[in-house]
Length: 401
Image (cartoon, rainbow, N blue to C red; front, side, top):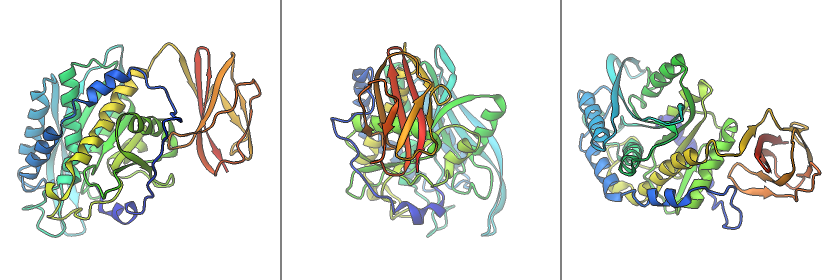
């Protein structure tokens, strides 16, 4: 996590978003997802973070960096995942503190090959390097929360998927990224990964990033990014949180720009959602970022978000109904005022819903065929329109202003 974000992340307002009476989507195959999430093991997550902390430092230019990469690769392989590789890249780091060095850095990529939709790729990522500002980071940067917690989520998700022998339709790539902490001063692991993916034409349909998901201030709340271009994806993950975890969820302001490991993905036009604790760990970037100063129970619950989201996305994609987005249905005027009009719908309408960026249904008018909806009571902001006919689900984003 880049230090520049510290001053604003503590200002997020938290919300208890859902009631049981207002679920934005019907979750398909919920028993399979529930069964998977029951396999998430707190001891496993504790041991992973403890092992990472025991390296003393995971600073990107410390001499132990290759050994850490080998450890992570070995863990993925031990789960029975056949395709695990270390992707090496050269990084020239120049920093205002006088650091000027060229090092080899190592991403670890575990791939679970998809079936009939294998060319679609979902990336689950977290950086594994660490930093401390109150101590020589070459010697001590334990990074239990930043970002041992996110790395543990990646490993635990891979472990459960392998234990289930789950065969996804889309390809899952679970990536531990190097060199995030100094990414403003040199090439980061996520930048290297995205550059190669984009050059090869890889179709990344979603990237989930876990960065600091182990500190709880008592609110039991997780935060999600809220990028306007990723409303559907954020809403889907909010739904998973509500249905399958005990966590509350909060959203960042929609005007926050992408940063850290989601930024390279968003820059290339890929969809991404950033998952993070709601109250910023006060031991951030210090020698006190230790297991004893975070809450493993919270991290365990947070791990269910990524696992559940991967499964939910895979189980619901390509169902018998056609999903038509944006170009097939249109809302006017844009931006909307007090009334929206809907065009482009064919067939008998079964229901209409408008959801906010938290995934809450805010308007559900009767499907009487009058494609004009009063939205005067809605606050300004982005919304998702969902119109379902017998065989088609139409969705479109719109802005009320």
